[in-house]
Every structure is written in structure tokens, then in C-alpha cells.
Image 1 (cartoon, protein in one colour):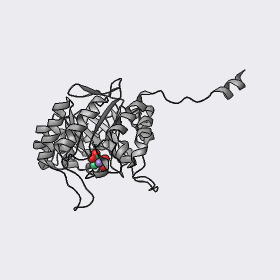
Image 2 (cartoon, helix red, strand yellow):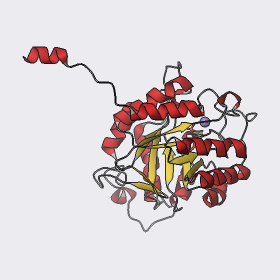
Image 3 (tube, rainbow, N blue to C red):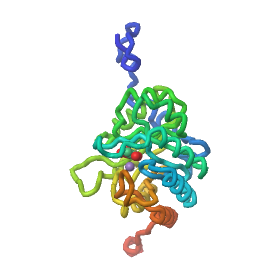
Image 4 (cartoon, helix red, strand yellow):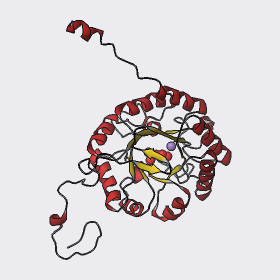
Length: 297
Ligand code: PEP
Ligand code: MN
């Protein structure tokens, strides 16, 4: 009998005898109330919502160091930046590779921020693990099962983005792979899905955040930058994400977004990031309950 997980022939136990009744036993809330994922000294999934920020792509030392210092000053707790970029067109900037990883690490060290970066290929696991504190599995690789299995064997925390066309069940099944392979430190990230509406880059599925918080013990964060693709709306969406129960947000920030080599339209300026952080601190708007009170009395 072929074992679905290992691909090896097993001793004749029928597969359905060993298959768990619940399709998502390891990520399920029934197993555990809440996981806190630690990335160095940053807790994701605890009482405080956290903010991760940084450029879409690492482009130069000056760009990533200045961004790291600015976001740190404004309250971010982790630096993001892509060195291996999943670009739709082969003619678009593909990232600086190893040099990008080195610059990201250097900027993180200077600003005293842990760093997260995307890993696209099994071939890059070793090198990315040498430089990064957290490994990002991008939307396009959410169901790259070979990559999921390989990263499950590392001791690094994983940021697992939702595929643009993935259902919640598929997304959680991808997380289940990582836990099943031995790595419990998974943070889920909603980053927008494809729907009929193309007014924005994607559709930010905030209801899925509340749903996943109800279904699993894993921390969940939101990436409004890739969900929305439009600078002016990032702050409002980040606030909504925290209001709906997300454990944090990850946003793109660039010293000069207009000349960014990728995702120019969605990256926040330093000033824009500072304003977003102020907005996240200010109380939510309240709704008037006067009418309701009038009825009661
Ligand atoms: C990114 O975070 O740089 C990225 C490419 O995101 P996603 O995989 O969500 O598109
Ligand atoms: Mn980007």
C-alpha cells in the first residue's frame, strides 16, 4: 500500500485506517487554544498585534537600511524584503538573490529587527536559512507541496500566505502539511484573493481571518498591500484587519515608492507608514446607540 505522505509502500494497513477523521487535526482549535510563534524576541499570536514592514524587493543597501531604521522608529517589530521575487513576467526585476539576503540581514541587524523573506525554491532553503529569521511561503507557492515538506524540516518559523485562488480549507491544509512534517511554528497570512471584482488588485477576505481564528490555534496576520495594491487604502484596511482579530499586519514600505522596482503603487512612503501606525493606535470610530436607547426607554 502506498503511504500518501511518505510515498513509500507500507505494511498493508489500509490507507483509510490510518487517515484521521478530521482533515485538519494538527492545526485545529480542538487540539490547542492558541499558538504563539516566536521570531527571535517577537511574539506573534499573543496579546499584542504586531506590525511587519519593509520594501517589496531589496534593491540597495541605502534603500533597505533607511527603511529598516524608519519603520523601527515608528513601531514595526520585524523587517520584510524580497530577494527572490515571484514576478508575473520574466522581464520584470527578479530580485538581488544572495546579495539581497545579505543586505536584508545587515539592515535587520542595524535596526535590531528580525527579518522575513520569501523562499521560492527547495534549492534555496539552505542559503535563505543562513540569513533569515522567518521564511515566507508566497501565495504562488502555497501548494508547492515539495517546498512545504522541506520547510517543515527546518527550525525556522514560517509565514504561510494564502494562495490567490485558495479556499480556506486548502490554505489550512497547506499549514497542516508543515505541522505534519514537524514544524509547529506557522503564521497564516491573508493577502487577498481573486474574485469577479477587479477594481482593486485582489479582494481582501477579512471574514476568512475571523473564520480561521475560530478554526485554528495558529496566529493569523493580514497583508493589505498585496490584497489591495493601492497606497491610499492600506491604512484603513490594516485597521480593519486588527479590528476583525488579526494578530498583526505586514505592509510594504519604500523610501521612494514611485521608483520602486516592484509593486510601486502599493508601497507606503515613510510618512505614510508613520500615519498608518498613528491610525492603528487611535480608537475605532464608535457607532451611535441613541436610537436603540430611545427605544429602550
Ligand atoms: C510578497 O510578499 O512580496 C509577495 C510576493 O506576496 P504574495 O506572495 O502574497 O503575492
Ligand atoms: Mn510586493
